[in-house]
Every structure is written in structure tokens, then in C-alpha cells.
Length: 602
Image (cartoon, rainbow, N blue to C red):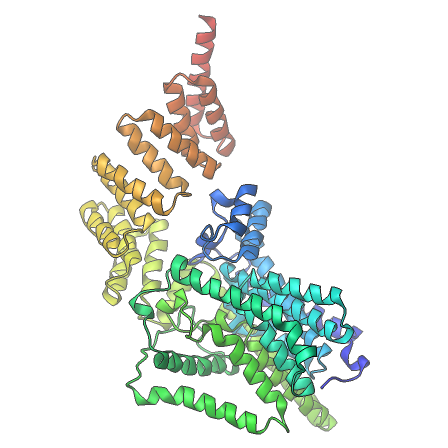
């Protein structure tokens, strides 16, 4: 129900409010500015083999080249890597900036729709701790980036509804495509726009409202189906863990919907990985979740003529959540059926509804009560910002995050396994062993836990036990590249070179762009006297990872051994650019230069 033009415009006070909002957002997320990489950040950020212009082409036109097919997000990561490499602060500041931009666009969109409390809604969205996972976790730039284009498309569409000009329509369509290329949960936008048309004018017009959205619906459906295919065939959302009946999926959806609403209303005990509940169509009380949700919707429907806002907010919330409620298989469902980042966009329906209710209450209150309510709103926003600041601390590094997850969810086998892996990486193998064993106690068929336990055991000199766990990991997942590589390394250390070479080759079948595997295979081949093949794999290693010091140095040694001194000298010089203080590389370069000088004198 639109108001007049003045009510829909932004004044100086509103812009000052947004400036204050930015300052508070930056402070609230200050603990995460320098946070490290967690969980699958390494898989999402640009791999060495994708950092070239050719790699950028692959990001767009080769599904499977990246962890998920969200080419705009991975292009953004590609650009950021060129700007600041592996320094995490840049990635975090971009995520925070995108989150603020989303909040500002929420205010603009609600003001254009003449929804009361637009700036309040933006502040709640910006400060709400349930969004920390989307902002502080680098991987979830797909949430913050897609939200900017989602709201950009919505704003352009609202302008098109006023102007009915082709240029604005194309802007909205392009923005929508960019949103889909960032995350396909944005495919729900055209349905949300029709919902807004119903809220503003009643029954949508086929010619004015529905028909122009047909290309949006078509693009959204294609993107959604393609993402479902990618999740199943490339990401791994398949198998017994995903075999559920439609009734069980309905039970999941009903419980998840109430869970998300509860975390919005009372954001306590937020966890990176929530406990994964058991779903059974034979347990009567589980039907209460979907039944009560349907009853609530029926009540809102009955009130729609007098109060259309609550039904609109609820339908937006549920409709935007729909792709993550359980009707479609998502890989994270292996660990939990819910996650904070799944409701990043959906939360807008409830937040806008709450802010509008507060704004109307303020307008209808006498001055003394209005001041008390305003003070309560400021206190509530301050509490949300403090909770966000507290939650942001958990993203300082992977160890902090996993330890907090285990405290809140002591049966989270993934957290035990990943914490063990993080500890092995920093040399704390003794502490890692019982954690990996706990993960296997909770989930004996988890190949990553077998791999991490093997790494820890191997670091403690228990190579035989490590090899047994690598083999078990490969029984569970024959294409597990990391386990093949680690097993190859362990076998090579025991002199079993032929089998090691076999496992390195198997690893490269699954992960051909891994420079470390090429390096390990090269060293094993050289040990078998296959110098030419070793040189080829070392060249591939430095091509994939130009900063790979040992690969440059050993490639130089092999080239020098083959009499190709000029090429060897080039590799030693490249190695010294990476690490100028390396005594070993300096000696190798001096020897190669001396040999070349001696040859020139003969």
C-alpha cells in the first residue's frame, strides 16, 4: 500500500542513520576482520590452476572446476586473490561491505514500498547475530553478494512497475541473472515479487505483473534444476543419507521452519553446525511441526483482508527458505538439517514485518510512551550488535570455531575430525589423535576422519597404523584424492615406491590441478629413475603453483643433471625470488653458474 512520494524518499536523517549503521557494523564484526580460513574456504577460494585468465574462463564455462557452480562468486574470489592473495582481511572486509550494502538496500526497498520502519529493519538485519555465519565465513560471500543483486533486481523491478520502460526491465533481468550466478536461492525472487504485487494491489494482473515475470521464472527454474544436479553429481549430495520419503521431507521442513523463526526471535545458542535430529514418520510428535505451521498460515490467511502484512511476511520467509527446507538435497544435510546462513535472505520477511509493527506502534503512541519505545529499540539493537560482536570471535580461526561447535554440539563428528586436521597442520598431532578417534566413534564410516587420524598417527611415527586408516578411507571413498596422496607419501617413505606412484596417479585422476600431488609423483618417479617424467610433473607443479619453492628447486636440480643448465639456472632464480635467503637454492644456483662458465671456457 504505497504512500506519497515524500514518504518514499530518503532524507538527510535517513542517510545519517545508514552512516551510523555502517560504523556499528564495522565495529560489531571487528573480531572477524583478520579471521582465518575455516572448513571449505580452501575449496571455494581460487585454486592455483584457476588463477590465470584461462582459469577465469573455466570458472564460467566448466562446471566442476569450482566447488559449486556460482561463477560470479568465484570470479569475485578470483579478482580478490589478484588483489591480496591469501591474506584473509581483504576477503572479510569485502563480506562486511556487501552485508552493509544489503542492509542499506533493504532500507531503500522498504521505503520504496512505503513499509514503515525501513531503517529499523535495515539495522536489525545488519546487526542480527544469525547473519554472522554469512558475513564472517568467507565461503558465504555467495550469500552477501547474491543478496546485493537480488535486492538490486527487486528495486529495478519496482521502478519498472512505475515506468514500464524496456531499459529498466532489462536492468532488473540482468541483476537477477547476476544474483543466480552468485547463489540460486535467489531464484525465489519472481515469486516474491508476485507476492508483493498481491500485498500492494490485491490479485496480480496477468498482463501487467505475471507475464513480464515469465522470463524470471524460467531462468530461476533452470538455475535451480542445474544447481540440484550439481549438488547431487558434483558436490556429493546423494546416497543413503539423502534417501527420504516425501513425508519425512515434510517433517524436516516443518521443524526447520520453526527452528529458523525461533533463532530470529531469540538468537541464543547459535552454532556453526547444529545437532542433526532424527526424522521418522513413525514418531507422532514430529507431525506437530508441519501441522502447526500450516495452522499458523491458515490463521494468517483468514486475517488477510484486514491484516495482509503478516501473511506477506510469513509467505516471503517460507518461500525464500523453501530450497533449504529439505525438499531438495543439499550436501550440508550430512551434518545438520539447518544452518544460519540458509536464512540470510529469508529473514527479511520476518524482520520487515517486526520493524513495521514497531514503527506503527511508535506512530500511535503518546510522546512519553514513544520515547520509551525508542529507547527500547536502541537497547535491542545494541544487544543484537553485542551478540554479533561476540559471535564474530568464533571465526578467528578454525580451531576456535570447531572447539565452540563441539562445546555446543558434542556429537558433531565433523567438528572433531576437522579440529584434528587443524591441529595436525600446526604440529599438535598428539592432541589430534583422540579427537579423530572420537569422530570415528560417532561416525565410523567418515573417510575424512580416517584420513585425519592417519595424518596424526603418521606424524607420531605410527606409520603402519596410519596406512591402515588411509586404506580404510579409500575403501569408503575410492576417489578421495587427499587420502590417495597421503597414502602414497607414507608408502614412499617406507620404500614402496611402485604402490606410491599408483596412488599418486589415482589422486591426480580426482584432482588433476593439485600442485602438491604432481610434486610428490615427480619425486617418486625420479626415485625410480624416470627423470623425464619427473621433470614433466615438476613443470606442471610450478605451472599450477608459481610460488612452489621446492618444486622450482628440484626442477632446477633435475634440469642441471640433464645438462640443461640455462633452464636450471632460471628455475633456481625463480626459487630465490620466492625465498631470497634460501642457502640451499643459492648453492645450487652457484654450482649451475660455475658449471655453465666452465663449459663456456672449454
